[in-house]
Image (cartoon, rainbow, N blue to C red; front, top):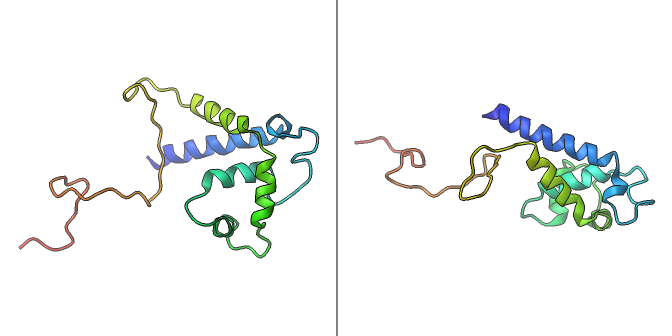
Length: 138
């Protein structure tokens, strides 16, 4: 299963890099946006947005840039984000999903999920897949 997760991630990153090669197609100002070299370039901005969790913007930036001394400011991120067109995310969504054609649907939907170890599920006492006792049976 880990191999499939890496395959999914690599496909996503590859697609973002392909988009980054033509950033003017996904920018509000096609002549100036993402034309200069910055720490938050087109690809990093998209990847950061996709990786954000529930922390503050400042904390999320620090985590994403591994607490680097030269982590971009929240203002710098906001400026970069404002350059993107909504269509960039629509394109990424549809192109990414097209990479994984499904033979079966769940109630009419195609489901694709990769998640890390932070997945929380409720304990069900009678379901051995979701419940494990830490105390030895007496």
